[in-house]
Image (cartoon, rainbow, N blue to C red; front, top):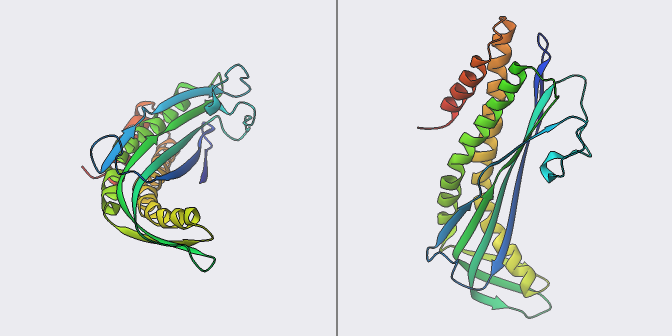
Amino acid sequence: MDVTMNLTKLRLSACLFTSFAFLSACTGTNNNGSGRPVSVVVAPMAVHTSYFKDKQSNDFRSLDQSVSKDPNFDAFTLWFYHCFADFQTEDEHVDDTAGASSVRLKIKSLQVRLSCPVTVWMSHDASALVRAHEKGHVFICRKIYDIAPAVVREAASGVVGMSFNGMGSNIGEARRMAVAQAEGEIAQAFRDKVVGRADQISINYDRLCYDEIARNDQSEATQQKNAEESCQQYIEP
């Protein structure tokens, strides 16, 4: 999703990119290594600041080789919510006859791994207000990332014990189709309650900041206040 808002009084704007990656793997064992049907491993949120035309950083998140400064804005923040699920399954029925394969498998347990790299892009001479505004976006990313483990744990628990059917040209393909259905259940919850919520909060945050700057309120403190208020509106206590 690409949202660009130009706040003309200060040329302060936010160009927001949200990405969701969900990768899955399927094994035939019943143990996810934790002794529990669902385990969630959360990597610390990685925040990186990079500068336009800065070629010194080798950090893959900086995207130095592909991002250049747009004259219409002074800064933007990119965030990526990543979710990797490793499913442990049990075959309940396998049919590999008549030139095609079908399988019915049960989800026994799974491990989910989460990560969230965030890159703040700005000019070296960005104003204090611009820097404060981007910090607001990082604050929102962190608040949403804090609730992500509970979201995926609930969604993953919902598929444990469920059975899914798959078909394909071979057994491996049939199993992947079946697991993809379980993956879809978790991915939908993650998109709705994590990625979609981050989008909505950030859009609201930019709107609040735009309104205050339009009223000539250019205080750095209002950036954090607006970020907190936006989070309170869309995140249940």
